[in-house]
Length: 263
Image 1: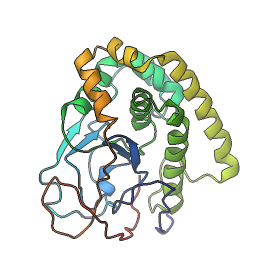
Image 2 (image 1 turned 60 degrees about the vertical axis):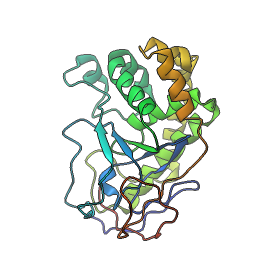
Image 3 (image 1 turned 45 degrees about the horizontal axis):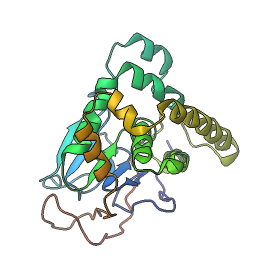
Image 4 (image 1 turned 90 degrees about the vertical axis):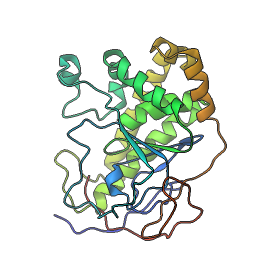
């Protein structure tokens, strides 16, 4: 097992303490990898897209103060249903490419409907995450960007998320069973493959508002969701080992580098 190193954030990444693959999607919605990597939260809601067996702490995760999540509502909304044979035949070993996005929409529209309904429901900032912050999060992020009129940023966000978790593999003290750090020469064709699949998916989606209505969202919910992703930027900052009013934004980060656990 390699020794932990320093995680190098990409340009535009949110510099929350302990965060991995964290950046703003649009409006008051942010994305990141596992929430267990954070040392303290500074938002009001966290939407966890992982399956129930995934959302738990690991041995290498940082210790978090018991009061760190006071005032924070964590909602677990998996994007898939266990036992779906069509999905299981394709998502091997798991959903790890945009070529599976359409399949998720076709097989689990009710799951996506739950996610977007929750995103539209609350006030304040919300952080959306899965395990890597790349694919399940990427599917939702792509649709949110399109709804915000920023569809031209979908490919860039995917590339940033893919590079972000690849960087994590470079420094993590945990050896992932299916992925490892890739040099640029090997990562570049993967990025190209992902971009091609994303373009095809977004062509299939078409008009994002009509697509969300076809998922079963009400017009009122879609309009509220549009407002959420169009809000003026207000970055929640996460600072470790500081007292704060639970569930509120911070104005500054300690900038402390956290030793990387594993994904």
